[in-house]
Image (cartoon, rainbow, N blue to C red; front, side, top):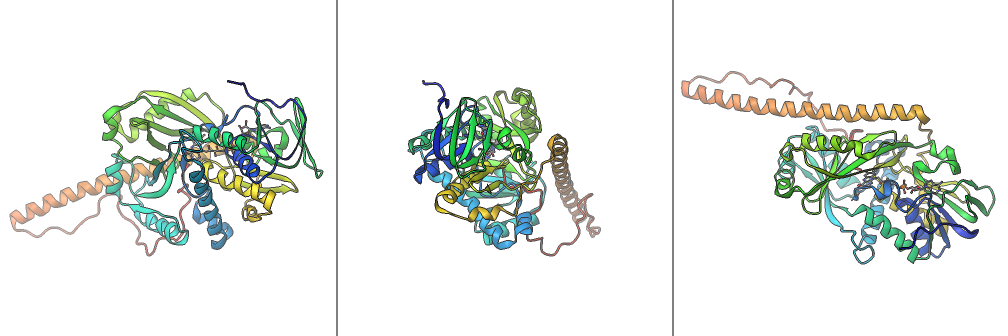
Length: 467
Ligand SMILES: Cc1cc2nc3c(=O)[nH]c(=O)nc-3n(C[C@H](O)[C@H](O)[C@H](O)COP(=O)(O)OP(=O)(O)OC[C@H]3O[C@@H](n4cnc5c(N)ncnc54)[C@H](O)[C@@H]3O)c2cc1C
């Protein structure tokens, strides 16, 4: 096998892309398909960071909940943004065929489960997604969810029949192969140390070569560094860790029969069955880089907490990668100045969004497509540097902690209600036998709820749109 192709000679191209993750590779593939000469410069190797570590779940939407998006940009623009996010997912579906990318193993369906008993929010969310945003969704009642996921941790669910999952690693390497085939040149082991974006022909400097290009696309995510420190500082790096278990055999069926990806509304867990009887699971997060192996037991504990019937499954492999979170939760897509483009900040939902960004930027450069302007209201906002990381960690932990607490409370209420129903049935039976009238009904502890008219139309901020 030949080693990585390092750039060691000067080059002139139409478009220079910095970063060979999902975003950079999709820009490169699409721009090359449209006839541009493209060079991709990658500091390490293709898919080195998050793009090579992701779980392959492709859902529509963004990290920012729909309700917040509508509040920020209005209903019509929110609908257009949502539709772009669906196009990103469709792009992956079209690209991830076994003919184009062998081993990509596309399978259908994803489920977003609620870790609190919030059926009214579910109805509101289904209305927004299904009717207003034309996305195929099914509402699953608690029984249906628990028939597929045998745990009392989850309540209602939103099933996305058009969502799907792929082998994430094969996809990113497949994208690189397609981009090369379309004529893009990918140079690995080639960090960009500085750029000068001021002239018509922009300059890009690497340790052993210089490039000139009409357009530069910054797709380096949180790792970008020297070429644009200002841009790097608008992203909060969050390391997410995932693992795959050893084969679990038939006992996996006692816990999970759902075949697609599962994410929860608290943004805590994301899992699915892989290779027939193994469980792939992502959960722990930090705002600093740590050795992934440290999180094997945390993931094992998390699996045991949700599915006690699986015991403590042996962990076969652990890995992690850094995602770039923006302060507003939307990705950074667009033109910073003439010929200088950005595609980053895709957070935990980077597959559909980076695919859409890649297509959009290539078309903007070569066809003058202006739809990237829909992202303009989401400006580059400083993420707070080192202080921001600490704050981000505390806020993240608080959000996950409060979501777990809400889940525990919901399960407590559910148990109390079941016990109350059994108690009432016994009492009614005793009264029937004694020929007396039943006493007036009392509510179980903690079940008192304020009367609600129609639930709010928009989704609440606890409902991330998946990973
Ligand atoms: C554990 C985990 C699970 C995930 N699961 C999912 C999922 O199921 N579904 C989903 O939609 N998303 C998922 N994500 C999120 C998704 O992986 C990311 O949003 C996405 O990969 C970001 O892609 P990117 O191209 O922007 O960045 P990256 O993958 O970080 O790529 C950036 C590249 O740029 C290079 N680079 C940076 N600076 C320079 C420079 N100066 N010179 C040269 N090269 C440079 C880096 O070396 C890197 O290779 C997951 C993430 C993680 C960590």
